Image (tube, rainbow, N blue to C red):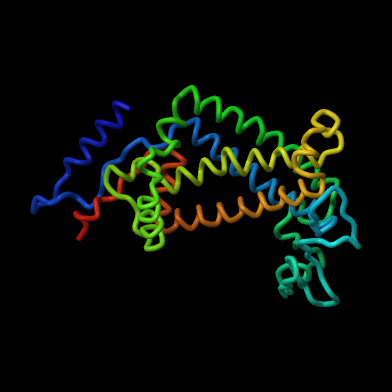
Length: 287
């Protein structure tokens, strides 16, 4: 951190010939090595789990609520094909997905092989990929939580202050993000309130819920944790919740990548790879 202060001071002292601040902000050490390692492992696990989960979903692309589900039961979500047309049905609403889901020029599966692991239909191999990376994710997130507590990363960097989550502050952040106006200067070093809430929601909400519902779907693990079936209302309800968690993670990843592109991908990628982040120039100093 001493080197970070030196780099910050030296960079901040750079001025142009007319005495104005340089448009290049200071380099600061933003992301610690353990967080960067966990981010990489977590990203790998999530992508493999989503794609191998798609293979498992293809075995029976219908979702139900309750303890049992079969082809003739009412499904709240179904994907597949009718003849040469692909479809996605949610409740009573049906969407034509020909060429993307259900029926494509190279697949008649609900989810095409471009989005699955392996890139051909094999339920056994899909389960092997899924279970291995599911347990790797359990180990990874457990280690990350221990580090976050011991290093105070959770308290100092992720937990929002009360004033940060006031309705007026959150609305201001939402409007700024919609307008693609991001924090600058020293304020850009830390996470903004929306980032903190999103990261906490994923780390303490979506991922644990996906893990628990995944355990609930395993007959072998039901013997060790039979209370999970009662907690989630049956294996089919757990499967539906598991799918919803996966969809929410896909939405989070999409927004996350979109914000990286909008904020400056080179600077953001440097931060997650090396830890060093160049603070954007304060808005009032920009030409």
